[in-house]
Structures are given as C-alpha cells and as structure tokens.
Amino acid sequence: MTDESQAMSGVTDGPLLSVENLRTTFYTDQETIHAVDGVSFTVSPQQTLGVVGESGSGKSVTARSILGLVDDPGRVHPDSEIRYHDPAFVQTVARTYPDRVTWAGEKTARSASDAFVTIESGSGEGSSVTVERGSVNLVAAPDDVTRSLRGSEVAMVFQDAQTALNPVYTVGNQIKELLDIHQGLSGTEATEAAADLLESVGIPDPKRRLSEYPHQFSGGMQQRTVIALALACDPAVLLCDEPTTALDVTIQAQILELLERLQHERNLSILFITHDMGVIAQVADAVAVMYAGEVVEQASVDRLFDQPRHPYTQGLLQSIPGLASEGDRLPTIDGRVPTPNEPATYCRYAPRCPEAFEECKSTHPERVPVDSANEKSGWMRAHTAACLLYPEDESLENRLQMHHNFGTPGESDAATTAREDD
Image 1: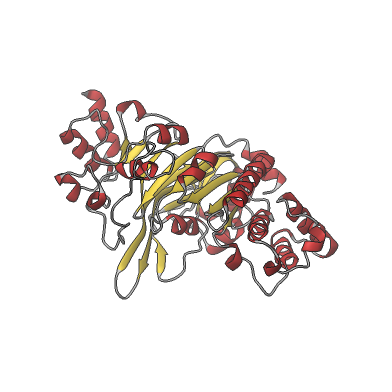
Image 2 (image 1 turned 90 degrees about the vertical axis):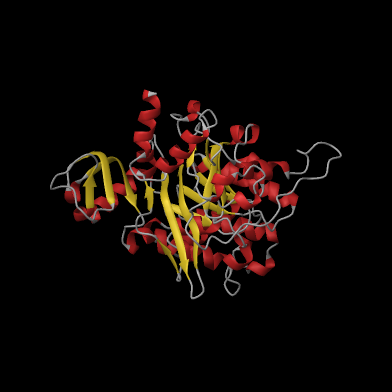
C-alpha cells in the first residue's frame, strides 16, 4: 500500500473490504457444487474477522474468490459483489477506467451502465477525478484491476507453507521476484528489502537465510516466510487461510503473536480462516460461522462465545475440550457437512440439528437479527443467525415470513417497516 493510500485510508470510516451475496459454483460432469452460496460480510480497517467452520464449509473458496483465484470448473457468479473501498485505489482505477464509473445516488451521463467503480463522494471526472469515498467491484472489474490489487492491496497467507513455496528456488529469489514485479526493486535494494522482511517476521540471520531453500527451513520458519511473501508489497488486507493448522501448539502461538504484532505495526485488516474456535477467540474481533457454503451466524467475538444462537455454533463450542463440564463426555455433532450440490431451498443443517422442526425441511433460513434489539446494530455489534428460531421475540408465523422476505431481493426493508408499524 502506498503512502498516499495509507493517508487516504484514514478517510474511510466504513468497511475496507465488503462481500455481498458471493456465490461461487463448480460445474462438473457429475454435479454442480454450490461451494459458496450467498455469503456476505465486511472487514473494517485494522480489524480481524474470523471465519470458522468444519472442512468443506467453503472458507478457503471464499478467500480465493476475493482474489480471483478460482480456476475452472469454478465460477464466481456475476451478481456477486466483492468491493474494495480504499480511496486511493478507487481513485486510481476510476482514472484508468473513466467510462466504467458510476456516482452513487446519481442517474446522469456521468454514470455508466456497465460500471464497476462506484464513487460515493468526490469531485471532478475522467482522468482528474478525486475520490473521497467509493469502491471497486472486483467481480465486474477487468482482470488487470484484480491483478493490480492482488499482493499490493490484498494478500493471502496460504494454508500449506510447503506447497506455497517453490522448492527449486531459494527463499531470497522468491521474495525478490515479488519485490521486482510489484515494487520495481532489484539488485542490492531488493536484497536488503527481502532481508528486512525476513527479519520482520522473526527469522534470525535473515541475510544468510535468503540463500537457503525452503526444505532447509523448519515448519514454523516456512510459515513465517509465507507471511513475509504476503507482506512484500505492503498490503492493507491479509487473507490468512488456516496459517497455523499444520503447526504444533508452541509454534502456532508464536505465529499468532507475530500476526498480532504485524497487524498493529502495519495497520493491517485481517480475514482469518480456521476450524479452531480457540484460535478464533484469541485473534478475532468479529466472527462469521460458515456451514455448507453459507454464513449461518455472525457476531462480535465476545457475544458469539457468550451467547451463541445458531445450533451449529452451539455444537462447535460445546465440542471444545475444557468448555464441557468436568467429567462429562465431550459432545460431538453427528454426521458430516453435506455437499451443497443443489440450490438451498431448506436448512442444510437440519439433518444434523437437534432443534430442527418440520418447516426446516422446506424453508431456507436467511441471516436475520437474533432479536429486535440487534436489528439496527452496526456491523461490529450486530448478531445475526440463519435459523428459523430467530428472531426469537417473534412468533413462528412472523419468523417464517421474515425469512421469506429477507430471501427475496427488495423485500427485507418492507418487512422491517411492517414490523415497526406493528
């Protein structure tokens, strides 16, 4: 992220990254897999959003979709929105594609019908436009826009450090290649920058380590190197895809401490993906719980752990050693995550849910406030759950109608107004 971008980022008091109705589908000869099915969330500046769920929930596909790394036969649906809100980046893109810009709230000649850049506040137009607030929809943007964002604005720490690093090139070569491509550094300047990166992630004797190969590093050092690669272009957002899964407990704690330190030093926003609720409790400000391609509950980390509402979240927390009553058998969730190979017309968790009732088999739950007190909370305070048990202060008939309305575009506002009138 450039100095200009860092300065302008202070203007953004809303989300830095927002995902709305993200749907990523894999089309195979045998079946169609709805790997990510209507996922929505936001990541605010210098905050950590934890994404948690069992294997097969769609967590990693969500992260790859953000960076445009979904290969055939996968496809991100064109009605999905992945918006990046950094004003400096939006301004650069708006000046490069002046004919693909729309101004929020305006229906004028300045607004293009095929726009992927939205300006909410600013001045001027064309190559001299100034953006104070806006966003770029990466789903609709050309590939070169996504490539310019990848690494320099949003970077990813992959799950398996051994496969993320190329075994036939030295660690130094791999870092310097990124510095050359994204920052134009070469020679001694690139070497010094690469050594500084290794030092920043806690690798001792970094200049000597630059000439070593990945197999000469321990598992913890390999993971630190992957983090250094992600930081090479000074991104604003870090997507961490289970970065501690293959590490022992001691090294895992060191990596989590490292990420926390780097977040404070570099003002990073982090999307942290894991299946470990203990890690979520340690690193996250807010949590999105995923199941079978959908976000089934979202809340601040304190509220989620104190008052989990969705039966799936309750099951995950009850299965953590130490939270169950002493001497009790550790509870488990029977069954497994289903393959989402058909449209969601019912609750996908119903076959495993101890609280399922008849309507769960025929009505798809949408994410709604768990009660009326949460309905108008900000994103960091809002507590929502995709379950027909909520809002809990409504009758079953009203709850079913609300879930139907929230699942119908344009009707959720009308439903809210109707409840307020009552």
